[in-house]
Length: 279
Image (cartoon, rainbow, N blue to C red; front, side, top):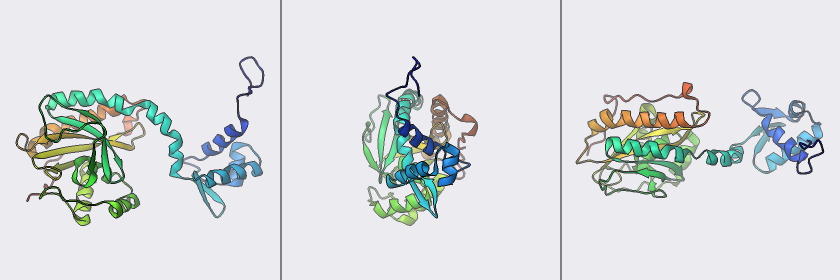
C-alpha cells in the first residue's frame, strides 16, 4: 500500500491485511474451505494460507476437520466494537420514552447474560411502580417476560446449557420452577413472538415483552412493558399494549443503520392463542 504522496506507507501491515483477507474469504457460499481453496480465493501461496488458518484455529477463531476449516462464533467478537459504536440502545431510548408516555407504564430493554437478564435502558412515567428498575439491574431469566424472550431466541444447545446452570427459584406462587414448565412457556413464546408473564417475579407485577432485532434481523435484546396487576388486566395488555410495543420495536429496527426492514417479521398478537397460567 502507498500513501497519498505515492510513497510506501510505513504504518500499513501487509501481514495483518492478508490475515483479514483469509477471514473474509469465508462466506455463505463458502462456509468451509481447504488450505488450497483459501489460498486460491485470497491469492496467496498454500504455505501462507495454511499458516494463517492454523493461527486462527489456535486462537479459537476457526476449527478444522478432515483438513477443512470453518470459522467459529468467536469471530463475532471482532465485530463487537462496530456494534457498540452503533449504540443501538442510544437509538432505542427515545422510542421507549415515547412508548412509556403513550401507555403510561414502565418500559425497558435488556440483554441476556448467563442465567439473568440485564436491563440496559429504562423509561417510566411519573407513576411509581414497586418493581421500578434502572440500567444495570439484573433479574432471573426464568421468572421474567424479558427472560422468556431471550430464552426463546437461544439455539437448542444453548438452551440446554442454560438449564444446566439456572436455579429456578420460586418468587411467588405463580413462578414456573420446573424445566418442563419453563420449556413449555419458552416454546409458546417462540410461537407467539412475545411473552406475557403474570406475577411470577413479584406479586402484582405483570409484564409483556417482545424481541428486538438488529439490522440483520438477529435478536439482540428484548423490550418490555411492565404494569401493575390491579391497574391493567391481561386482556388489556394484549389488545392495547402489545400492538404499541410491537410498533416500537419495529421503529427502533428501522432506525438502525443498514436496517433490513423487508425481511423483518413483526409478530401478530392473537389473544385467543395465549394460555395464561392461573393459580
